[in-house]
Image 1: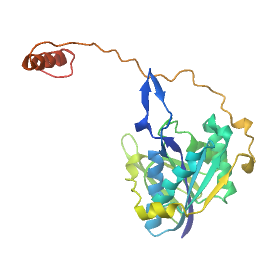
Image 2 (image 1 turned 30 degrees about the horizontal axis):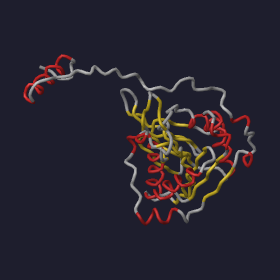
Image 3 (image 1 turned 90 degrees about the vertical axis):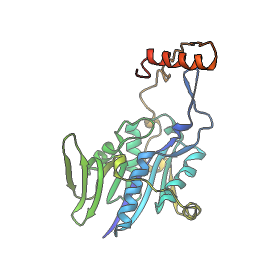
Image 4 (image 1 turned 90 degrees about the horizontal axis):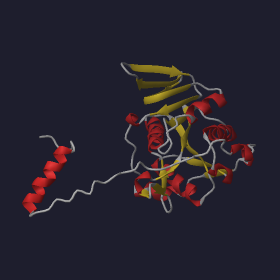
Length: 262
């Protein structure tokens, strides 16, 4: 069977590189990467293709216009996507899930639709878990969430997911949208050869205007009032004496704080 799989990718700051100063995150010079759950979604698409499906895998992202997005999407291409679609616009610097979903839906239509749309269950940074469902609603296709196993057949897509007290198996006709959880697979690390090939794979770029969307309407209607790390009070306990006495004092202090058991 011949299928087209679009994997929706969010390029995130590498949160492992974020540092806190005066309770505020320091975001300057933080590298970007493909989100963790998006890597799971991409790996799921690659495994479907490797399982025998005649599949074309398209990695699609919606992001603010900056020089990092195109470079980050090479990671998705190196993993195994056949081509990339980038929707970038200055208006997307301050937007929300509704506007992102609208851009994704229009981009999917712009490139001729897809048999299967794959999303991470939530993004690494905000984890709202909204975009996959919103896109499915806009495109009028069925959506299944929390997938830990995906397979395709002539009848459509079959998804297995874990619920509180059961394993649930669902089927839906294609085109369909599926959001995945991290348990579905272990994303591969691209080989050096595939990293070198990534830059030669086709990449299409669109603005919101190219998709018939109003940039002004993409502006979010909400604002972040505060983004502060929790205060961490230090006790500044000084333990005096020789090394043996200091070690004993440290153990006693940790026991009193409940860090160590007796």
